[in-house]
Amino acid sequence: MAASDARTLARRLSARSDESLAALFAARGISPAAPWNDAFDAAEQLLDPASVSRAITGLTAAEAAALHAAVADGTPVDGPTRDTLTARALIDDDGTAWDATATALRAATPVAASLREPRDPGAASPTAADSDDAAAERAFTAVASLADVLQTALTAPLGRIGAGTLGAADRRRLLDAGAVTDAPTADDLVAIAERAGLLASEGRALLVTPRGLAWLHSSTIDRWTAVATALIAQVPPAVRRGGAGWIDTDAWAGAHPYDPAWPARAEAHRAALERWAVIETDGTAPAWTSAAAAGGDIDSSTLAALLPPEVDRVYLQNDLTAIAPGSLAPQLDMRLRSMARRESRAQASSYRFTADSLADALTAGETAETLRTFLEELSLTGLPQPLAYEIERSASRHGALRVGPDETGHARVTSDDDALLQTIAVDQALRPLGLVPDPLDPLAPRGGALVTRSSPDTAFWMIADARYPVVAVDADGQRRTLDRHRLAADAEPAPAAVEVYADLLARLRAAEEGDADAAWLGRELEQAVRARETIVVAVRLPDGTEREFTIEATGLGGGRLRGLDRMVDVERTLPVSSITRIGPA
Image 1: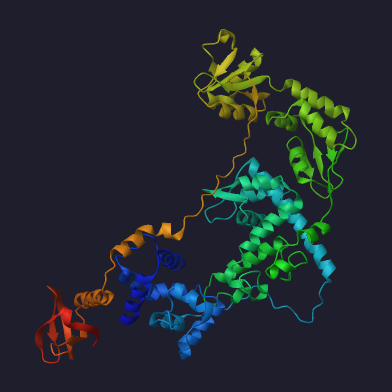
Image 2 (image 1 turned 90 degrees about the horizontal axis):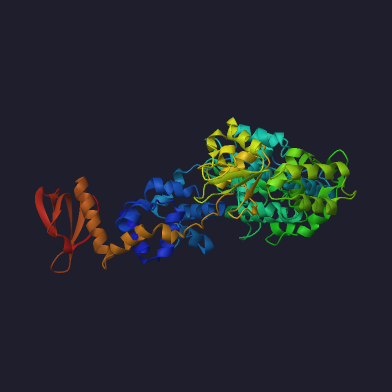
């Protein structure tokens, strides 16, 4: 590192705004806890060979080409690229590369990588219509599968293993639920859901977000558009075309020529776009994203015209099944699946009503009346008598147990059926609740009520999971609806870089001095003394002339530099105020 470069950069850093410095530190991956005391510390570390080498890996192909030209023949970097590289402290304001940058660039090895095999120019291509039809089918399948993934995650959060990938047990759960057909699809869809903000991590658990829950209640085309918009927004800047759209995906691998991790990241982005039918399997854009690829907007109406039409009616049958004669509208599918188990998923899906599925619906807040009303409106064949009977039977049994709060806020379980209370009191599955007769209840000897130190919600779900006919009530005995879905907490907005680096910036500002040259000279002298270096010192004499001394620096204090003059082998003491510059011997 040239001392003059570090001095110049320190001066440049002092002149920057807090926002500019914070952006620089963030771009260079500087820790907010960096032990820097002033701009000179910052300049030294930013020009440290290891730090510059890390910054080189982030160069785009255009930035690397411009920097190579500046290093090879001295051509200053110009235009927007100069602004970008200057902002990252890789070049000076005039477009010339620092010595440390030039050294790191010469030592860097480009990554030879390819995202995909080169296309055979002579290979036949499908017609545009056939290609769009295939992509539309892929879009429809991806939307339906992702909805099933989120539905499964609502039932129980998905889990990650230590490596950060989806656990084998949860992959199997998705496969068994029919949400996906293979493990790679499961991983891809989970990654897409995270990119779109539909799933979020809490520790090793993957939970549906409030945005994901709202997404589940939207139409198929709205579901696709929301995720596609998020994926396009996350296309890396290095593969953008003029700040919008994207370049040919076959060229993505070379977008960061010095980053060995880039090809894998680029492939992950490309695979997500292909899985979601934002691009074709050959990397080209289908009709509905061709404008977006050029920097425009998604044409979702073109895709909607190619998707299977949605239906809003089903056939209810005497065998307690429902058959949807097409793709059931998502909001209706969500409601139907709350009361029936889906048995098959296709463009014609089937659902089966069972005593347990109806009990789950009643537990979640449905009543016999709301179930009948919904199914009568949904059915093309009316409400079959066997299903009507099963609804009435389930509703008549449901609510035999009531769980609400007592005076202390703990759970209190009541029922008109003393035998049922006595049954749950000795049920081994409910032992953790510690249910005991309520000593304040006049019917306590006969078990008129049970109490527990658990909360009403905890007691309710444990009793419901044990398949007892239970409802939740409030303090007045009125029925209330509980939602057991555990959603991810809303993500906190990321703090601005200037907030992240507030302490470091305050330290740098507090150390600023009026005479930057004198401050840097003092730093160079301190370093020379610590290393006992032999340096050339230029001193301004009283008559205004300068004289150079080659000395081995041995001490610094009281405004004077002490050292052994190597030319005449005598000790010299030089006033620091008269030293104009120093350099290597």
